[in-house]
Structure formats: C-alpha cells, structure tokens
Amino acid sequence: MKPVGASPRTATAAVVALSMTAAMLAGCARFDDSNSSPFTPAPEIGAAELQPTTPSEAPPTSDQNAPPPSGPCVDPDPAVIATCLDTTGGLVALPDGQSTLVAERRTGRIMEVAADRIPVEFARIDVDGTGDGGLLDIALSPTYAEDRLLYALVTTDSDTRVVRLAPGDVPKDILTGIPRGATGNRGSIDFYTPNELLVLTGDNGDPVAAADPNSLSGKLLRVTSLSPTANPPRPQIALSGIGTAGDVCTDGTGNIYVTDRTAIEDRLQRIDKLGAVFSPVWTWPDRPGVAGCAAGDGGVAVALTTAKAVAALTTDANTGAVSAEPTLLIQDRYGQLNGATSSADGQILVGTVNKSGAEPGPTDDRVVKVPFPGGGGGGFD
Image (cartoon, rainbow, N blue to C red):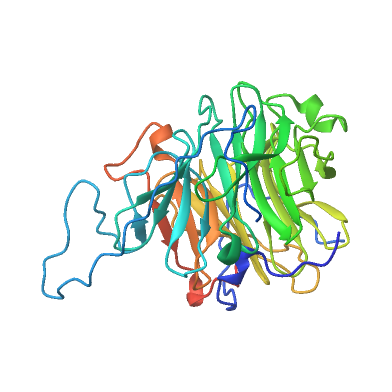
C-alpha cells in the first residue's frame, strides 16, 4: 500500500496526545506487538433513490438567562449532541468543525447533527434495513469541500454495495455484488488515500465465504475505481477471514485498523503502510461486541456494543502495535454503542444502537462526545 496522508476524518481532528491510565478489561487476553463532473439524472438499474433536503439554519444565540430547553428529545447531558434518532450506523464529522453526519441504518436517512441544534435530514437512501442490513456507513470525499460528494455502504434486497451521492442527484453505483445474507451484513468504509477507498465486508453468516478469495464476503477491499462505471474492476483484497464486520479506520501515519467479531473472540487487526498484516494486535475472548473505531498517532478507540463502553488502546509510536490493557470509558452510561469517528477537537463521537436492543431510553438513539483522560484524543481519525 502507498503511504497515507490524513483522511477526511483525521483532517478535522486536533492533534493532541492520548493520555490513558491503564484499567483492566475483563477477558482482554492476547496481543501481538511484532511485527465532478455532473451526473445523468436517470437512475441506474438497482440504484437507490436519494431525496436531498436543505439543512436548517443554525438557531439564533439564546438568551443566557433563558431556562434550559425541555421536551421528549432534549437530553440534559452536555456530552449528548443529538437525540431521538433511529438506530445509528456510521457517522462522520463535517469540515465545518461543528456538524456531524449520522447514518440511520434502518431508515436510510443521513442526519446532520450538531450540539444545541435539532437534527435535520441531509439525505435519504432507499435501503433494505431488515436483519442487520441497511445504511451501514458513510464517508466524505477527500475533496468534499469542493465536490460535496458522499459515499455510502448500503444493503439492497439483493446485495450490499457502495454508492456515491451528489447533491440533487440519485446515488451512483461504485461497487456492487457484495453478497448479503440473513445476518452478518455489517460493514464499513473509509478513505485510505484520496484515490483509495477501504471497504470492510462481513461474512454474511458464512465463514467459508470469508476465506474464499473469489468471494467479496468477509474481506477488507481496496477500491481504486471511484467513478460510476458499468463494469468496475474487481477490488483488491487486503485482508480475508473477517467475521461480523466492525469498522475500518486509519491513524494518519499509514496504519489501518480493523475490528470484527468471530465465534471465538472479538479482535483488532492492523495492516501497516507496506501492506503487512498483524493479525491480531488485540483480542477480547469475552466478546464485548467490538464495533466502530477511531485511530490516531498514539491510540485506537473501539466502541463496544454489548459491553456498553469505549475501549481506548495505546499504540506504539513506531510500530502501531498494542501492548497494554485497554482503558474502559463511559461504561454503562449510554447503552449499546456502534459507530465511532473523531470530533473537530480530537475527541470521539459515538452513536448508540439502543432502539435495536431490549432497553431503549427515552431520548435514544443518540450521538455522544466521549472525553478522553487528560483532555486528549490522540488526533483520532
């Protein structure tokens, strides 16, 4: 792989040191420290319908003496920046440093959220949200400020695919034909370089397919054809054997981190800038439900669904390896967590998935900013 510059999510994060006090995570047992042009208005066959909407203006500055807002979708916790969403998928910070786009997995809506603002619908994609499918993840074009392009990983009634969205247009297929199943359809996307999109796919409940080089299931794919075309080239495979896909994130120095869940353990894997796979660098035999990740020079944060926490892991500055027990943050405070991304100040934003669980709260689902010990976020991506 080529050396990497900062990804769009990294570019908005402040580079600050990650300072973490080690706290034992039960079951964390093993690690390895070794080694635009305009588009045609007619939709393509199978393309989903995009219904763009105009985000509302920011509300005027409130009277400092006014009483705090109240209502069914107001959370008094200052760390909560959005409430009353449907089950969330991936999320990504916008270049303005204030707003975040959040995918609603089951509805196909992309919501723009910010602190002290009511969430507004940014766009909507027709998806099949049954099982664990739907609008799985989103990623900004590396030149989003100029082209306003957004990429999304979605499941349809026939497959999982990557589509590209432009304002006022329908989605255009970038990569199609990723198998989907009754379960195991989770996945993630992130840019590695401006010309290379990483696509993480689940095994669709079929571990054999995850090991099959002829299948796109259970893989980390390198997609370099980013323009709509009738016959896109087959993507290269960077990693095989993925179970239930969690997330893919990069640290801005060339390392790629991947989270997934297997029948035996949850794990964090790493690929360096030369393409060497370090598998795994950390495992969780107690299977806390690893999900979204955000990485920076010095650390990786992993959202845990079942454990209802964020695991913060310190990485070696030279090798990117993990060699110490993770610190657990916000455990049992916001419920089940899924997507993760960095905020403009280098901290972590996570989305909850309580509405798809057994115990949703009155303001779920939410987006929460997670403070890190020492006030740092490690320049997370």
